[in-house]
Image (cartoon, rainbow, N blue to C red):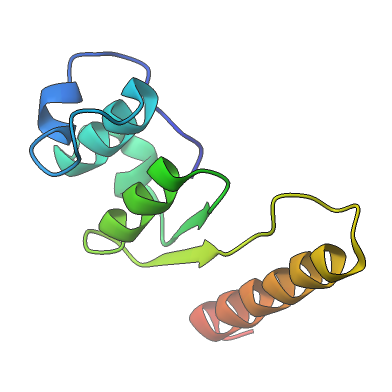
Length: 104
């Protein structure tokens, strides 16, 4: 799911669950999902999130209460050997999750 915070109209909905000091894009995205006004969330089978910032990490954890969610725990870079291995492992785990979910 891409961040879909296209309007500030649902930020109050997001703030019912998320801290008010989070990024407006994150609060809006969660607000759309929480209020069931986001067709991408509504019609999706699964949300795939990543941990590139703490706000998105929290949002994806909470979205997991609304819809099946897989969170990629990604390292913040790719210029160290262990980071590349981390990316590879997270992609492998996602592949397994998708194959299990879709029976492939």
